[in-house]
Image (cartoon, rainbow, N blue to C red; front, side, top):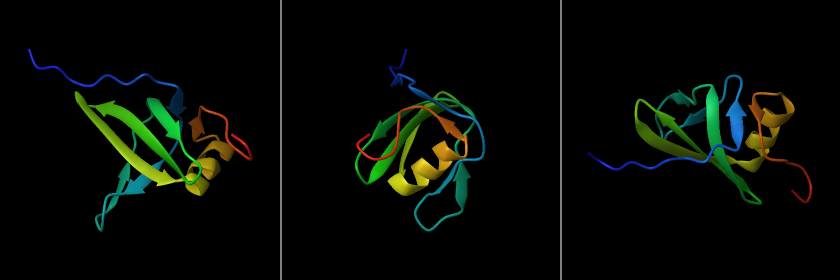
Length: 81
């Protein structure tokens, strides 16, 4: 049996959250539990889809906009977060 990564959810996607993979089209992160790791200038989002562990980094400003709009419910944001 193959081992696979397991995320520790600390947030939920509750609306349309997309990212661009390289020069390709926009890719939607499915609604549901995710793990978010916040940095000063970015947010790394980890999720599982179809048995695969996936992740992306988005600019912190985009993450904060998603949180303010209620599309991501999770770790605190804003100054000093």
